[in-house]
Image (cartoon, rainbow, N blue to C red):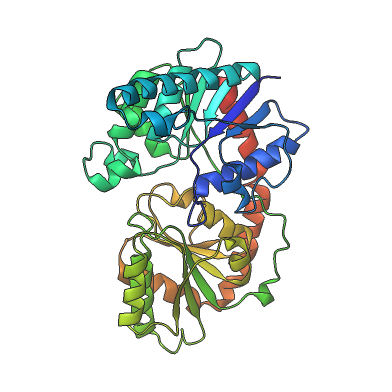
Length: 402
C-alpha cells in the first residue's frame, strides 16, 4: 500500500474560519478508520493543538508525526544579534530543516507529499522535496480568487496569497506533480495561460462532504433564523448580507417580524458590520456573534445565506448548513448551481446586489410551504451525493494519477 502524507505547519487560530483545516482534519479522521482505503495516510504537523482547540483530531493517532522547524532554534537568540553570523546561521538552519524533513519523509516511506493548502511559507520545503527522487509532490488550491487576482499587485491580495507572488514560484520552480483544487475555473485558468507544467495533473473536485454524526433535528424544532457564517472580509461579503437584511426589513416589516438574522464570524470587517447594525438600529433583528461550533447553531436554524464573491462551491459552511437541513440562499457565481438548485434546496440570486438578495430573503420567508421540502432535499443530497465515499473516490483517483 502506497503512503501519502498530508503536511500542514504554522497553523494558528482557526476558530474564525479554517475551512480547509477543518475539512482535511475530518477527512484524515474518516480515512484513517476506513478499512477499504487504497492508501496509507499520515499527517505531519507542528501544531496539533490548533486542531484540538476546535475539537478535531482528538484521538491518539499513530499516523500523526511531529514536524520540527529549526529555523528559529539552534542558538537563534545568540546569533540574531550579529548580522553576518545571523545570515550564515539562517542558511544553515533552513538547510537543516529541509534535510530533516526529507529524512522524516523517507524514514516513514512517504510516496506522495500532499499539502492540503499551499501557502508561500511552504515554498522553502516543497521546493527542496520536489528535487528528491521517489517522492511525488501535490498541493491543494482552495482560494477561488486566483483566476481573478493572479496578476494583481494589490497589497491585500498579495498578502492573502491569491496572486502570482505566491503561485508563480510554485508553478515554475517546484512544478508539482499534481494540483488538487476545488475549482474548475482554476484548471481552466492555468491551462489556458499555460502556467503549469504540461505533466502536472490538475484535478478539480465535483463535491465535498461534512463529517456529521449528530442527530438532525426534526423540522418542527427549527427556529425562524437565517444565518450568515464565514470570515468577515471582502470576499465573503458580510456587508452585502447586512444591507440586504436592512432593505428586507424595511420592505416587509410585518412578514419578517418573527424572524431573527444572525452573522457568525471574525475578520477585518467586524467593526464595519457592528457599526452598520448600530447605525441602522437593527439590534432587535440582526445579531453579530461568533461560535466555534457552527453545526450546533445550524441545527436550530432554517436557512443560510452565502454571499461569497466569485464562488460558493464547495463552501464548508454551506455544506454544514445543508447537512443540518437548512435551505441555502446564494449568489449564483462560479459553480454554485452545481450544489444549490433553485427552488429545490434553496434560492439562487442572479444579480449580486443588495436589493436582489433582499428580495430572495423575502421570497423564502413568504413561502413557508417550501421550507420543509428544502430541509428534506438538503438532508437527502448530503446523504446520497455529497458523501465521504464520493470524496474519497475523487482524492484516491487523483493520487492514482500521480
